[in-house]
Image 1: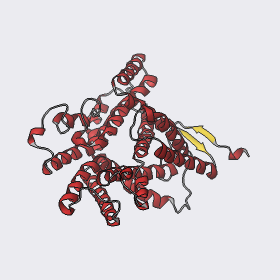
Image 2: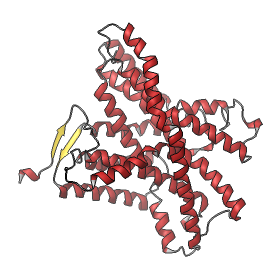
Image 3: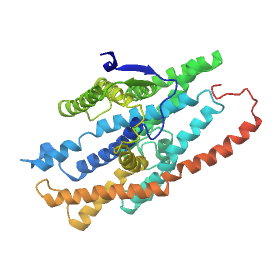
Image 4: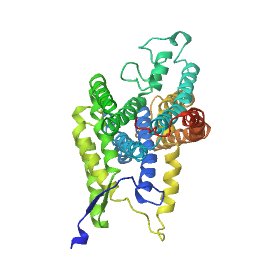
Length: 398
């Protein structure tokens, strides 16, 4: 009987490798989460709300239900980000120049996608008449200002500047940016060699927690759960694993139907923490290599990897593109909204969604796919010279 009891093991390093089941799951979920957010926002922009439709057909009810998990999709992004980004830093924290390398990794990851997206957003705004030359200024309240452009690159949207170009999806990147900053400070507060450095880092984290918006700081707990579970391996049978998956899905559906999950605020923090823990228990139970005879891992990894590759581009680019598609819908077809009672309009919706995916993939090929090349270049310029001049005892934790 004891062999059926789940066994929990703490790991010094997170499991890695594309042949591990949790890596396959992460790739699949990154792609699905980005598609879910894009599909949800597209439906909200081109279709009326479900409650506004008299006698909605069954297919439209199904579409509204399926595209109603955008909140949980963003929650998955936070959890996976903590698992991958935070877990990776823990693996490397004691290595020389670990913090400098981490900073370069985070900046190149964000800016390689954000800068082209902001430029395209500005061009689309000018081309569609939403933005005029008079709106491009330095005002802290203007979403198209130079100050908003710069502030969004440094995670200041929703903190001191608006989201650039009214791209509401950018709010979560403010959370991510501050978590990227707060986590190494938190780690250094416990692990830095010098006591003064520990005190300074701890005091900085406390100060940031007091200055930043409360919900942003509160959801840092979700991100940290991802970090923590990257160090936990749960060994259990397939039946127990299936129970955790069913429970996670049931919780998501329950909160989707019975709870107002539109905002990331303190009212939703407790249920989001519960959903995150259950989901992470399931993911931690998948930290093992797939069998060499598995016929499922390879196609799942390939498909998941394809969509995961451009998931970030899709996430930040889909709302500006939806604005362009809405204008096309009006000028080309004379439609302000699509009708839930017209099955042909579903084909138009699916075509618009496919356009979002194709355009985001093109943007990925042009820009996001260059991230690792730019990252290597930045490290060669910024870190190699430092390595030649640094004393042998220098470590990244200092």
